[in-house]
Amino acid sequence: MKHLLSLESLARADMDRVLRDAARFKRERTTHPRPLTGQTWALLFSKSSTRTRVSFEVGIHELGGRPLFLNAGDLQLGRGEPIKDTARVLGRMVHGAIIRTYAQQDVEDFARFAGIPTVNALTDDEHPCQILADVFTWEESRGPITGRTVAFIGDAACNVARSWIFAAAKLDFELRLASPPAYQPPPEVLARAGARVRVTADPREAARDADLLYTDVWVSMGKEAEQARRLQEFQGYQINAALLREARPDALVMHCLPAYRGKEIDEATFEAHAGTIFRQAENRLHTQKAILHWLVS
Ligand code: CP
Ligand code: NVA
Image 1 (cartoon, rainbow, N blue to C red):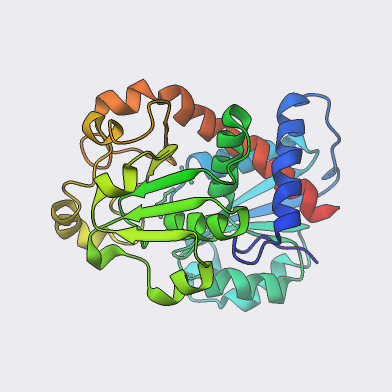
Image 2: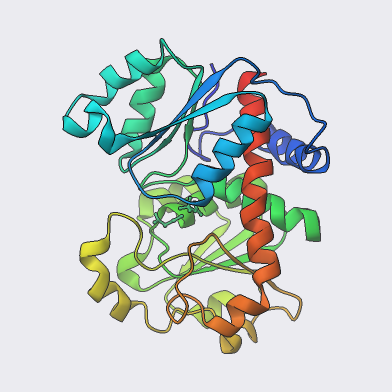
């Protein structure tokens, strides 16, 4: 039984296959095979979503299956039914599950108890589907990411940064994380990632000669109570024209979205790179179709 629970646990060969197939699903959007024909896949979401929800619902439909969106708050899960019981019920009724929640352990438990292919659609720890789409977006315009330099500016302890860390270890590119000291990834995560990741508190040092500048929100879902403190502490960690001047002249700028202008990125830089950023959003669809195809093959 295959699952996509984290980038850390995804084998390099499987990652390569997903990235390769994403290009084919994009090219052959209307003619590709429909491996989910006759299947129902549940989307079980405890947090808000625009891109992930829509791209999975459309992707499952285009692969021949039926998406079933379940807001966790509307289920008995929201009234305290354990995840392992929810998993054992859904596992008898649907063919696969896409889960967005808080604790990584909940996705791991769901996969174990449901016995159906399970996808992490964002937890507090990781956002593997996002980073696969990001790498695909880089590679479709610039070729292999191996050997390149990616600078992540912002909350380097968040799920998106952590999946970038494991991607760097697997795909052998340099990842520089620029974050205030209190928001840097824990040493044990860095230790698991190998030698390709560097952490600094200086965004300019991270951005210097980088091929790709990347950012995410300063206040992730679930961290709303820390908003005021975070907005203060992340001042200076914005992607803007001054920071971009440190990078290579042809550097790409990416944002996983949603974007908060004037916070992690300024309006002018966001709009100047909107072509890349919204292609990145579109590529969630194509990459996730490749993930679903891999899961059932
Ligand atoms: N980037 C991303 O996962 O977007 P959503 O939260 O809208 O799904
Ligand atoms: N780090 C962000 C990603 C949103 C797609 C969050 O968890 O809210």
